[in-house]
Amino acid sequence: MGGVKSIPQTRFSHSLKTIEVKMKKFIVMLILIAVIIGLIVPLTARDIQLLRPKFEKGTTLQEALQKRQTDRSFSDKELSLQQLSNLLWAADGVNRPENGKRTAPTANNRQEIDIYVAMQKGLYLYNAEKHVLVLVQENDIRKETGKQNFAEEAPINLIFVADFDKMKGDDDAKIFYSATDTGFISQNVYLYCAAEGLGTVVRGWVDKEKLAKVMNLRPEQHVTLAQTVGYIK
Image (cartoon, rainbow, N blue to C red):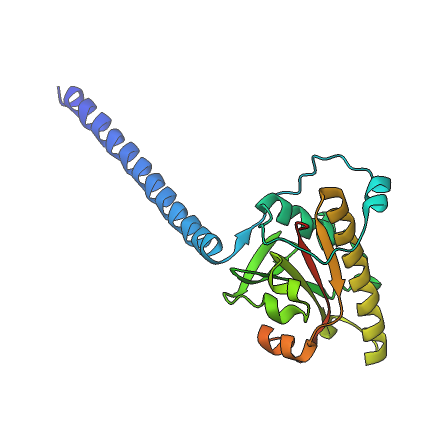
């Protein structure tokens, strides 16, 4: 009879252990969710997660080259998140994830050119590896990106910044190669804008020292050019 009475106890103990295991799994899941939320909230609150590049217009390279032009009259209409995402990927995004190489070449693959994006809601730095815009400051510095009036009216001003710490050679070599590498990125922007029906102009008429101070750049960082992007008036 004693053996018969022990069967329910065994089942009860087994049930308790099952519940305990499930509770532990549930707690672990809650902890993971909390960690994930903790990681995501700062990104959505401060940074901008860009969308995967998506090109639907089907413009050929030949057509983009035929349409490529410089514009100096922009409306204040904002670009969509998809357009902004496509623009930055085209400019200097990662097109070969297996080795981190970009859409624009750089000397010895130094990838020394950083793209800053000045918008009404703040200044951002493009992280190509994560395809994210990282908030640098919440100030609207578009007016400081150039001496032309349209700079503060257009929705997007790209600022190309060379990081000499990532380069080899003397200053003359760094200036030369960072200038050519900026040119490659700028032309990518031109071709994307031509394909998308947007206007753009690359600009050298910039108070670079003043802009560097406004952006809080390090001494090793040097503004090379700025480029305005937006809808044509």
